[in-house]
Image: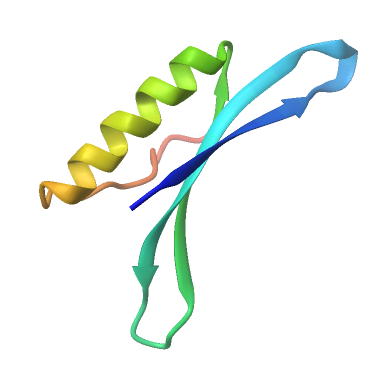
Length: 69
């Protein structure tokens, strides 16, 4: 299983990093993806992606953060 580190240009010129990876397909055949954004550095996003992938492969569930801002 692989994921992708993404880069986004925010208003004001700031850069935000994030990652996305596939969780498989749901019962209707639609793709499920986990997306996490808001990292200040690329290295932080890569480390978080690596951790999320390891959790997924070890059978631990990976969920989105339920908090809203």
